[in-house]
Amino acid sequence: MAKETKQTEMTQVELDDFRRASEYYIRKESSNIKQLHYEKNAEALIVEFSSGSIYRYTNVSAEKFAEMKKADSVTKYLREAVFNDPNCPTEAIRGVVDGVGY
Figure 1 (spheres, rainbow, N blue to C red):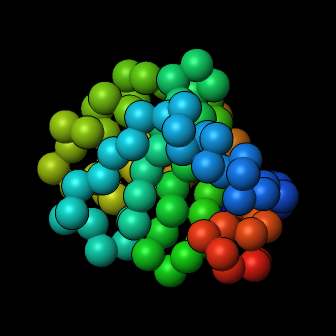
Figure 2: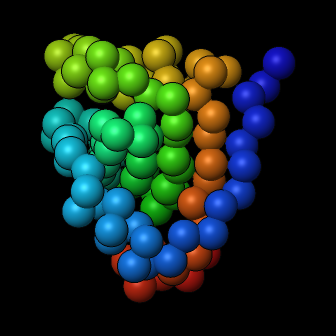
């Protein structure tokens, strides 16, 4: 059964606030992922893909985030441990992001 994705509106200000409050991480080996932002208190991960799509995943533990940083492939780890995990709800972020309206 496919995981459901909720649509969420997020303004540029809200996204900037999340970015400032989060731990930023990306390893340049990923051609699919532009940026990752993790907010420990909210257990939330925002993934900005190279395509411009932005998704927020919740219920992402600090342990999962730490494991991801050690993984040989960030993309593969995220696919297996977060993207396909039904316990990590997905929200497609919509709104104005980096000056581009979606």
